[in-house]
Image 1 (tube, rainbow, N blue to C red):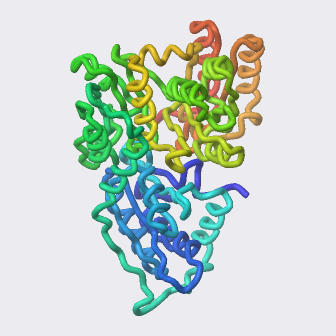
Image 2: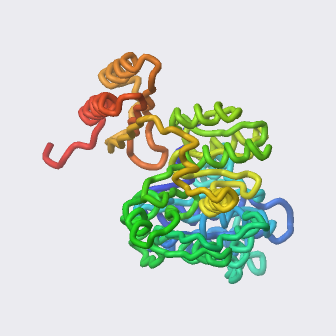
Image 3: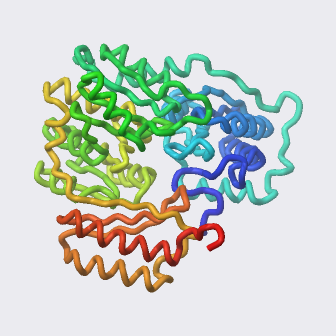
Length: 456
């Protein structure tokens, strides 16, 4: 069955517009509380959020829904998504909820759920939540008197997560001597991330640490690296790091201000782990969006790559099923299962910084382990996500591009799971030619699926 509320990463949309309304949030709270109960004991659910203005509205609605089902709530305030995964498992809570639209602009928001083990809910559980929300099956379940849930503030949540992160960094190393520019995207990690690096000894130049409810991800963070690169050059820093709004992903720039993306970071970490014998089954799990240069680098180092559909949940599923410990996406969403159950920008950062300190090499030098093949990604806003095979004109242009590349590149066309976008990605040896092929497809998509201008 096709999901009606959930996308690839929870329920997401424009805040205060269906389905991202207070009414649906309250129903989602009731549903996750119902699914979390297993007996007569008192149950607990952790709730965190990023710094969006609409988080206040959605948080209160979720709390009301959860408490109305007789389940207690522990609110932690603005905290990274991976912190909620960690706290849920660490506190033996029955579930975790994060209110965030990740890297999206502030007017969007989202709700994602974690099971008691800190992993995101499987498809079957999300379908069950949808069924509960869209039906009247639990409308009559209303505890009364002392059976109604309570809401608490978990005041030491930030400190717990900081200690957890520091334990992910080798105990025989520190960050003394490193000058780091850190962009927190005016998001959920604006207090936690600088504190971790400073406590480990780094000199930190923080930017994007003044959230006001509407500036999350605005010209900052992992989706906009120009301010980070400029700050690295201005402060003569050793490197720069940029988190996204909920800090589950991270991107780097080297000492020259050049971008080092998720594929390159995975190459650095995977090859280092291969040398140390720590890469489980010598295998790295990535998605179909990863650059072909990553495949070449891992094979050259004696490793194996497994590819999944786009989305960190699919990466994690493959890792758990196969017993692998490293996976991720080009976007900077990386999962180190030896440390956390979901993508964690600061865990990823600390693994890279440990390699920098252990080897004494600059990030620009480490990044040379992988040669990035020319790749172009263009996002097209669409009016509807119509199956591409039902639009012959688009399919003809895709097939023509694939035929021209003749195995020396690839074409990948997919809809975003969280936004009304079609992503057109082409990879090949000639940058000018792949740009021409990509824009040929993009023009066709705009003609047949694009959003029409007013009056058009």
